[in-house]
Length: 241
View 1: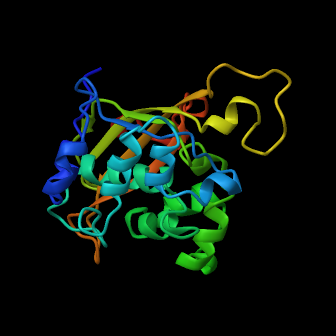
View 2: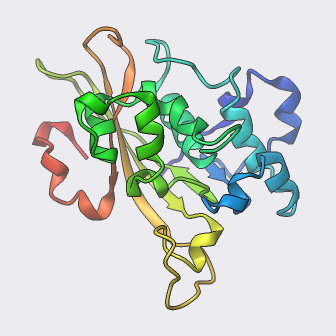
View 3: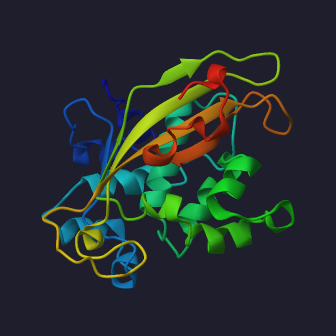
């Protein structure tokens, strides 16, 4: 599938363009093997890049989550690919510049239904502070944390109906953190060590909101492992996959 470019995320910081290395037309989000392990979480993206052969993709991710590039709140002029990429990069660098910072950044861009689905928290617990704690333990979100590479595929657009806004779906291919080559995300050691971290195929869906205070804004509606989306996760036929 044709993949999106991430270069627009660098435009707000022209001095860093020299460090940008195109990835063959694909929207790749690659890391230096930081992973969710505590020792790696303490590394800055710059240190991780220097420790892994000068991998500039960590620097790209650091630029993407910089306040000059990452929007602080949803806005009608933000395109769905920008919202999706920014949130995925935030999960990749979940503890940059401080523990849980990535979860704080994405909190406003997830619908309440999505936050509830990935954490299991109810409406009474729907606060940024509780999302930071429960999100760090979410199996769905952990897929992206410290990932060595994330590829965002071509969008599938589904027109809005009388009861909901337009929907855009992206297939996402995630190569896990380096630490996952020898242990599961739960921390349990694998029976056999892999040559490469496992690859997980995900789906990220965004909907153009029709309700205040985010009327007209693209919001992340679903983050789903493809293996568990065969039944549509309760989606109606007109919502697409």
